[in-house]
Image 1 (cartoon, rainbow, N blue to C red):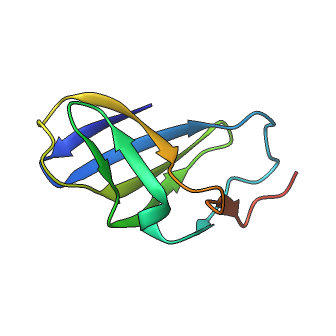
Image 2 (spheres, rainbow, N blue to C red):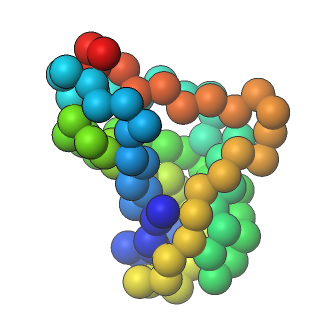
Amino acid sequence: MSYAYATTNAQCVFPFPVTPRTAPTGITSSAGTTFQWQGNVNVNATGISFNGASNTVGTFSIGISGATVGSGGQVVFNSASGQLLFTGCEL
């Protein structure tokens, strides 16, 4: 789940299917362009950055364009080579 907090950025929340003992401290991902934001507009992301994490969810932001502030959406991969790994955690 995600929402546009600016016309050029969306914040995304990713719930972890397994609770880590230690919260993640970063992310490793494929290029930002392998992500797409689907909300009031469907656009490829221009970049991705780690915001923070707890033991239950991780948050990250993606660069987008043309979004309506406050609109909800979802982030999907637009390529089979897409990956998002939360790093620094211990299972």
